[in-house]
Length: 337
Image (cartoon, rainbow, N blue to C red; front, side, top):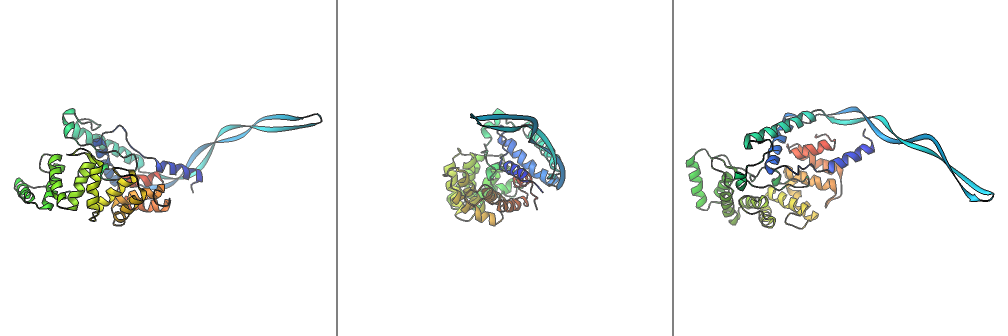
């Protein structure tokens, strides 16, 4: 059983945000992908262990200091026992993840190898000649999750194009104004799937679909504005398209709107609006929305602070493999299941 001091310490750890302030967006994307592999290869294995701990305590030091006060026959003396600070060792039971060290080593090695293979260095630093074509990703200084925390390819990716004739047919359909084809073609150019990656062309096709009211096209266009890929980064314009899509019921857009109200990205910070938009996608099983809702309960943002509710939503996201949810529960010393 953990004592109250340990619980408070864990709560402080749980509210800390692990952000690599000097890492590149490409490094963060590589690390995210490696974390998913790391948790699959080395899932948390929580056991209780007896550990030796220490704390500072005050003990008598053998000295006595006395102070006298008063006048004439009325004199009072007050004596006080001196103390000193010493370190006291004691045993405690602690939840320990036996796979944590192996998983951290796996993620570290995987990230360095991925960066080296893609960029020729272990930090994913992009050569100057590529910087103009490389999108930027917004680093959030909170643990809440949104699509900007993963590689810069919008959600709902299409199947790859097998040959040039399929690409030509898809382009022909898109040019005729078919919004689903326009969205798929935009995905292909954003991901560089069988074609050279071109974010400007991707934005062109997403915009054509968005202007026809296609919710996925609106979401993807908002995403490109939110990260500044193919267009200048513009939070207000991103929110405009996210809202259009969210109002049509697309749960990824609803999560995006809730996230952005939660952190004041292009909106004035509004926890009530954030909770309103996050509730539906979380209930429908979207892991990122579940984590964001858990984050609100853990901190009491727009909802009563409730550790049990926070754990409930963190677990729902963790059981879908969301790495940040798994690591948050790990830091809180809470079993995933």
